[in-house]
Amino acid sequence: MTTSLIVGLETSFCQDLPSKLDKLYEERITLIAAPLFHPRFRRDANGVSDSRDGPQTRSDLVLDSRGWTSSVIGNVSKWIDLDSICDHVRWTAEAVFKQELAWASHLSLTAVVTPALHSARSNTNYARILNQAASQAQSGLLFWVLVPLYVPMQPSDEGNDSWKAWNALRTMSDFNPRILVALEVTADLPDRTVLARWLGEPIAAVYIPTNIFLTNKSGYPTLSKQHQRFFLQLFQHARIRYFLKGRPYHHGRYLPYVQYLDHLYSTRSSCPDAKAAFEAPYLDYLQAPLQPLMDNLESQTYETFEQDPVKYERYEVAITQALADTPEAKESVVMVVGAGRGPLVRCALRAAKKAARTIRMFAVEKNPNAVITLRNMKVSEKWDNVTIVSSDMRVWKAPEPADIMVSELLGSFGDNELSPECLDGAQSFLREGGVSIPCKYTSFVSPISSSKLWNEVKGADANVLKGYETPYVVRLHQIFSFARPQPCFTFEHPNLNAVIDNKRYHQMTFNAIEDGVVHGLAGYFDSVLYADTCISINPETLDLSPGMFSWFPIFFPLRTPLLVRQHDKIEVCFWRQVGGGKVWYEWAVAVNDTWGPIHNPNGRSYWIGL
Image (cartoon, rainbow, N blue to C red):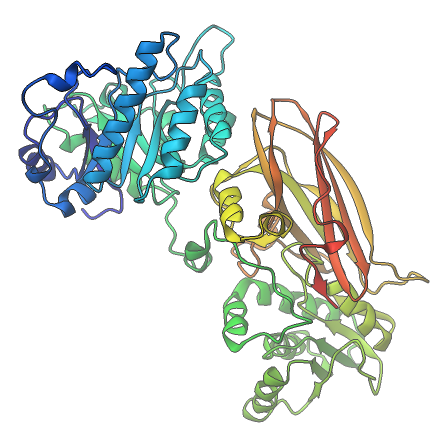
């Protein structure tokens, strides 16, 4: 059975590494996590151990370089104590740690597993030594910190201590992207919010002790229902490696465990649909938002958006409803503003047939390249009742008023691609009582944790400040949300206010459902197209347009991550500012009334050009 799962074995001792790997391959195990040095070969800082005869560990010649790189993960000696109160013990631990990392680099290993954290200690020296090693490593060596999923300390314990120890270490290490989690699953699991929080952490490996498996009626290993649910969530993160740990209790072999994991993996929510196939390459991949007014979109960009059947199905339903509400004998004037390469024109033509109404249409587009496509379509698809207009909708002088105005100018945050400014300019040619599709849209905000995204922002721009003050379009994946999204800004069209002002300010208050670190804010939107026809990327209302993938959420990073405790008050202020031919957002976050800086003041790092 083929599977994308990478399954390995953690062992405390391995005398003959090549022979062990050959045997493991027969059981479909392709990785081994083995000690870098013999577990009994303890060293000291005084050099006494260096005087011993014989090799300190196995030769690098037992495997070729490809074998070391592809098949072996190095375990740093577990007996070292980097935070001992005894100077000699601590110095010895530091010397041994550096020696073993040097050997791992010599072998070209991809990763090493460092000792488990002490949940009752600060691990400050551990963090210092680890961050120093991760910052100075010349190769691509990764550091996996072994963290148990659940460490019960007392009856009131919720399994948070191990996460707190991990969080303290990675915070002291300045969220170094080379320092990752090797999460050891335990027989007892914490509650679901704690598990969900771990899913937002940079998990590189999952260690699965064989003694947590149950036995089914046929005598084969299985996991409890709670463990199964957690593993199905883990399986959504493709880069995690899984290591069995301990001796085999079932049939004296590891193969039954691998087969069970394969079976469990095959039952996960698979991704055969168009939405998942489209999103797969973009998971947690930062992208700059579009500047559709300043830049003309390329053909490839249009093609990408046009692949979404759900969006256009919802638009077609909305236009059909709007036309059905007009008198049967009326010939309606429909204007598609921002027509692109014509998908909404096709929707309107099909809607007219469904509603049994007569229409005349204007397709307005400012991109001269897209206009060429529209004019070709007018001929090839016989759009006899469609007039192609090459103009910016904000300055075009319509020859007659429109009954229905249709647009798809929304961005990931609803208004971030300047739909309000565009439609406010275009509504001058909308008949009194005319309809705008969409007629309303609202942005939503939620505080989230994602060290992966935060580190991506950190390394995305040489100007670090600019990176943290720029929103990014991203298919959020490895995150933890501290609270349900709350509405932020709302816009309605046509805008009937005597004085139109698209500046906005809104303050929101959230209560953290669990301890964690806020790395930024997730932004979403939903929109009412017409009557009860809606579209949404808000996680709470995805059922309004299931399967739609035209928009990914937007991520507003924080310059400094904020530690929060369960039930802490998280306040978020958002501004939408307009001036000087540009639009920009500013945002600030507070935890328990302690405020951080306002991001992007005066649009100094990011703005959208009018």
